Length: 243
Image (tube, rainbow, N blue to C red):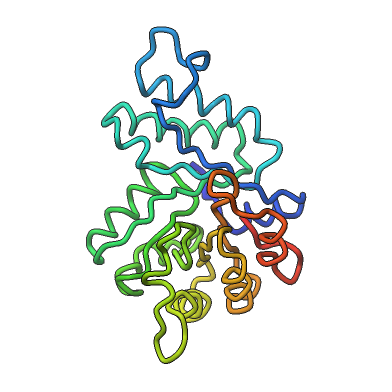
């Protein structure tokens, strides 16, 4: 497969005014009966459902974001469906980047394996990661200059503040993470952050810290994030920068 650059793919979509990221979190139990493959297994059904979504939205989105948990739950069939879904995106919409929403976080050697899985096996263009282990643990991700490394900063779940709002020398922890991601962790220019749409005030604070860095902003839809407030808080100096 030809080398792809996550940031360049994103910028091309932003240039067209596309900021929507579609999550491919296909829960097999919730797939409508009408969309199920006649006589097909779980993996075939998930792939067929994803293909419908991709074919319907590929002219509207800036990225796709599958969460491996929904696929791993079904063993080999699910894993094959995830790989085939990313392959289909690369074939049907090669200009659209794929973010693997895996939220990986471990010590260095384990992350080397996660890096290879995401980028060499699944061929994702970016991955979400946990900052808790520090930069040395994330080195294998950061080393892939053409790939995107999206650091969890202020997550969209209701209980995220238990840790992320804790203050260190008077500064909330999520802001310290944003500073690290925009500073020393971004030596390769491939770092981004994730901030939930459910916290627009915090999103605005993070935008001030990270400048024009891309921000992945989940939480619109089921989690009731406010779209208008999200855009106002999340856009960069060019009116872009949002996924």
